[in-house]
Length: 96
Figure 1: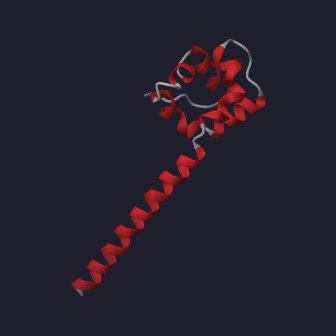
Figure 2: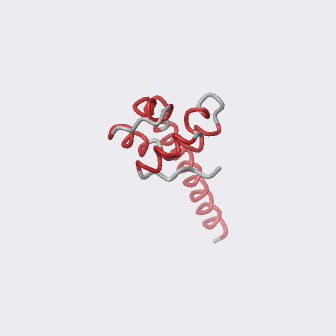
Figure 3: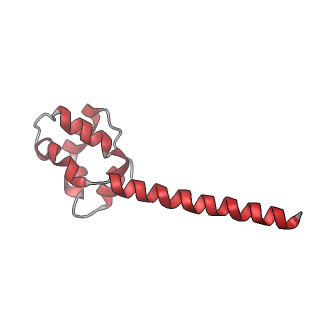
């Protein structure tokens, strides 16, 4: 009986490891800061954002925290205009 429990525990642990690695892989594939190029004029000035900007921003929403922490991207995604664009597009701005 104890052997069956140990095997079941191993199977569950393996499933957790596989699931967590698939989640990170899927997230890595979806995070692409170049998709925000449609928003560049709105992010750098008070220009209104386009519809394609909002749709791309919504796609990249799970990645915004990572972009804010990236020194090369921070200037574009952590400023007043970025917060304005996110708000107008209905995308919650991450609180880091």
